[in-house]
Image (tube, rainbow, N blue to C red; front, side, top):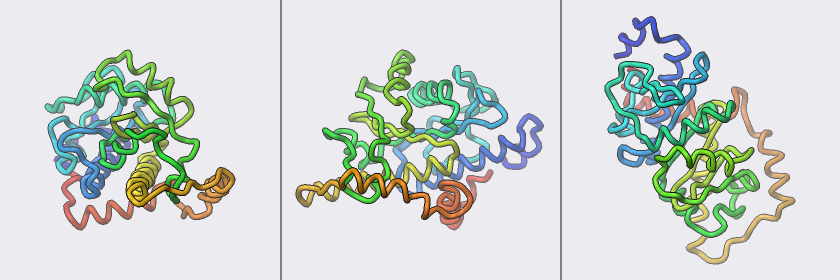
Length: 253
């Protein structure tokens, strides 16, 4: 399959690299237990085709996604390749509206992790009660549950509720994380997932202690001081891909 992609003149070098990066991300999510049978979705917009993005083939588990079986579609839902797999309507409806209206939403991740869904379903959502939660204080949008996201008209409300944020809790549903790059979105998702897990653990022990707003501000100001070169999330994502490669390298095909 990889050879077929390399020999196909219609696939640019940029698309080939995007396919491999996104396929690797699906395998990382599967390894971390962030999959949901055949559901949920991660999309990646193509640099050289801003109206086109890649999405997982509906019906396959995250651990089965490869560079070549990712589906290429435009923001109107038209397939741009001869991929035989269908696309999840809920995934297209949600992701296409963000890709259409948000130029900086290069990568979008939506999951139904237990911790993410649990925090999305409690009054107050994520609270600044742990290290990772402080990363997101004041940076999370919320959208009320309207049922499965398959109606295009909900898109206007999704964009309106998101505003200038790039992390959203879909109440009673799950989380949406966006990034200017896939590694940036990955690191946001990882930190948000940890924040939710710790909030759940803390809630079982008693009354959580919230971090004061002035301390949160200092924490957020200083986060960049612990980043290493390469860009937000780049070394983190690369480390996880190395772990995936020790298990199975077929995502590259």
